[in-house]
Length: 184
Length: 184
Image 1 (cartoon, helix red, strand yellow):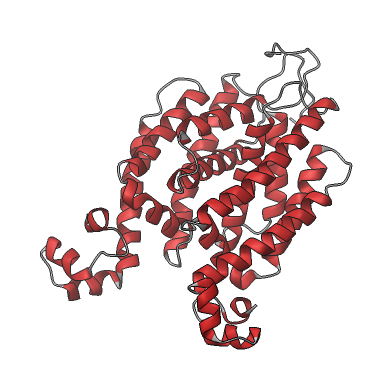
Image 2 (cartoon, chains in turn blue, purple):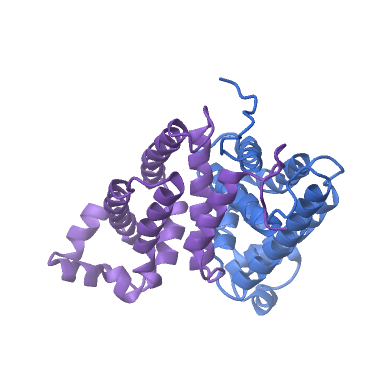
């Protein structure tokens, strides 16, 4: 899209309209302004990316499923390195009505992740009665932290960081009465 | 400050200068623009808040120390509800040279938290040889996620959310060979 080619600040409503084969007035009528257009495009892209990510989780362990999810969604941002910082900034701090729409979008993924944790618990990978909803919030925390660090140039291996944080979260840090085997 | 009274978008260099008893030219000479001034003010405020937070951790458990830290730093944002969204957005997505300064500021707290985890491990609260640096990243993930959710109006009890996420992270979700007592 035009945003990816020239960047958010420089994108011109007239050139966006020209690419779409409509008048700038038509674009303005539908989207109000540039930020509205960016939100609409990102929202649709994420809908497709998240649907694809959730469909492609596979039948592995919870850790493997989350690692696949991280890579699919991260991939969306990695394919647009120029734009990712703006996309993330504008969606995390969206104004209404987009704030609620993005919150609802994240909420749907949250529900799917809570279910994944529930199934992992039923398979015996996790304890019985784990708080899957809270675990899903932890996953989002890790994902967004790594994504922000990456777009700000503060971390080179964001996906591996998410994997390691998820693993530590699943394993916990408390001492075990039966001493676990750890590297010493 | 002027930003808190009228909001970031409306703040006027001339009125900021008038409050400070200097000319707008002097302000511009020192800070370049409004965003630069905001970054400088936030950076200094956070230095003081973080120093106070780290000095006031007390001698309780790691969980209690982190809960106190969360409340001190969150308190800074809660006292300026109008401005918090802008502060967070502009600091998380700062441009250079501020991006590196904020990263270094977070890095110093990261080092202090990794040490806290190390000491908790030595006291037997955590396993031996835990990855304290990774744990500190997990804490930041939880803190920023809750803070973003709060400024976006998506979560009403952000500090309790951080406490619960830290607790789940410490306890882990894996089944224990010796079945732990859990509510069923």
